Length: 79
Image 1 (cartoon, one colour):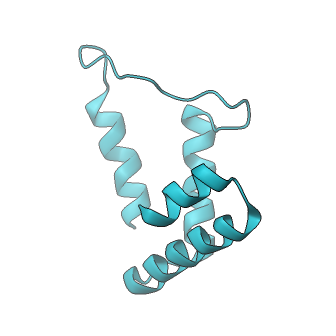
Image 2 (cartoon, rainbow, N blue to C red):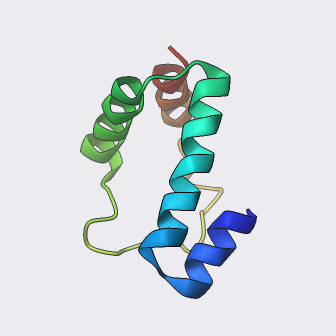
Image 3 (cartoon, rainbow, N blue to C red):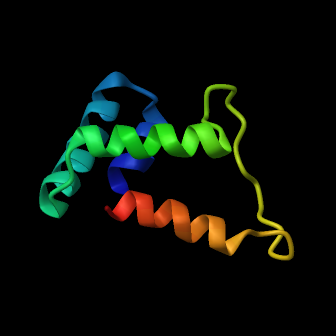
């Protein structure tokens, strides 16, 4: 979280590089490959959208939440 906060505060390419170092370390630790991550990102973006329009989720209406759909997306990510 430290690197994330630093990037948010400074909004610099250097801090983004530090944040990506953390992500790469996590991927290596978990045994994830970048191709896998991009595949999951694309599947999620195709199904639920991405951040291209800078729209972000502010809250989740628990009454309308689709737990089964979330489980399916999670299964795809964990393959």
